[in-house]
Image (cartoon, rainbow over the protein chains, first blue to last red):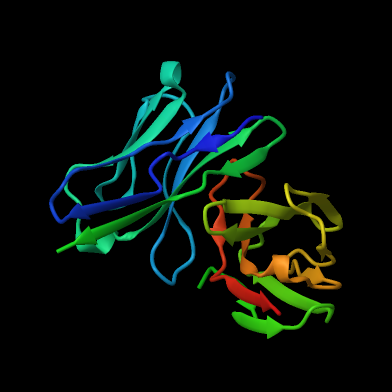
Length: 112
Length: 113
């Protein structure tokens, strides 16, 4: 079945550490990809998206993601995390039929 | 302020007692949808609506109903709630379909005992 996988379920980092969260999808055609973030007690909001063009996408708050078609991946990165980045991060992909599928999420905890 | 609102934010109810969770958006969005969020399962789509009077099933529609009589409102109806519907529910809207940024509501935490 077509799906989105986030293998890191829970990541714990210290402030200033670098972050990379994995996202893989299982569909061979053209895809549109998103990362959403959910801060504690808040609703989901869009971090960044990729539709076409430059595979390195920059989003808000210093986040970026790289689309690697050959690896079916769209990993989220940030060079130096802050305590305020503590949140749950969801990768999402649009599949044929305009179907938006979310991954299971990665919980990030950043300690001062 | 552009927003998606949901009511109630928290609800504890008993098995079998019909309930409605309201969702309203003030952005004139055509597309609206409902998700449930469960630990380890992420967000799963329950129902979506491309426009007024047009609704369709998502991945987990069993036990739920929706209606879209007005563009701004998309209520979620649980005719006979069961404990396995205990979850965190999110309504979302976008300009038109899934290619556009989804704007999420604040969530409704439902407990069915």
